Image (cartoon, rainbow, N blue to C red; front, side):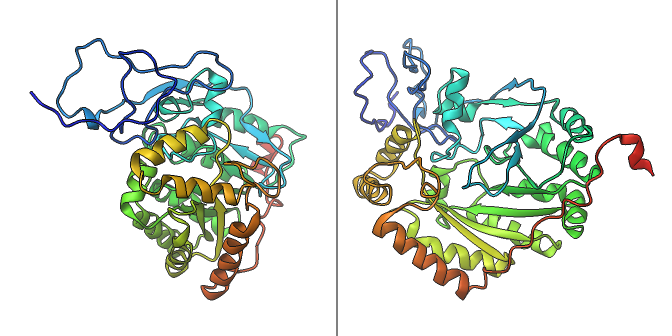
Length: 373
């Protein structure tokens, strides 16, 4: 029985003759699991014992494994000048969307897991998060301020369909009249319109849809389990129709691959009802640099070097700039041109509406019995 040959990548560190070549797994973004992370000495590889099925090895499926992340508190606080919210909640660690560029991938290294396939196939959920949130909001010293739900990994990733953690968290936030903002790539957010629309009417909720490309082929290999580009635009329209303030975020923009689409993305979002726009050039911190380069050379070998060189051009000669204030915009001529294009586009498409802060004065905290009066 014959099978068509599999594409392979540069694998200088793989010396085991039984190591499987890096390959595309159906529905997954990373093409390898050989990066164990900064906190683990050995590398981790897939190996074969010779009993592999030869039928269609190029569309090998990898199942998602769920774990439990037990926590005592769910609200995280930060002082970053680059983040619009000082507090956030993440119902999940890891993300099934499989976006190869995801800045959260390195967090799996803290769990002694790979930022590669482990990040998108080994998901940790926080089943007690709604109860922990209720406790925190009930504390007499808690003071409300807008928080971001799912800022590290998408709160509406596929596993949310069955786990419903995000919905349960929203129910608690609505009960306490706590303001919240969600950034997502998923149309699953529409499932919770019965909560989100009343919250938005009370100026307690707003949303941002992240759109990386309008090219279905690029989207399929770059973020294989996220909603299709047009589905995200339709989601903006549905949220806007429901009376929810929604923004469109062209991010991440990848020079030489997707950055030429910025104006079209912003235009499509505006026509669907978005009131504000945003953009972020691609960031490649820590292990993501190697994962992204492997993915790029496998899927777009004809332009890989050009893309990497243009990323270096807006990151001070490197593939990543970790510095506050510049890491979200880049520096140099490449970054300046992106900023000029963006400024023109938001004015042209009316995506420069004044910022309206969410309302924190309606918060009903403290003793839950007192909220009955």
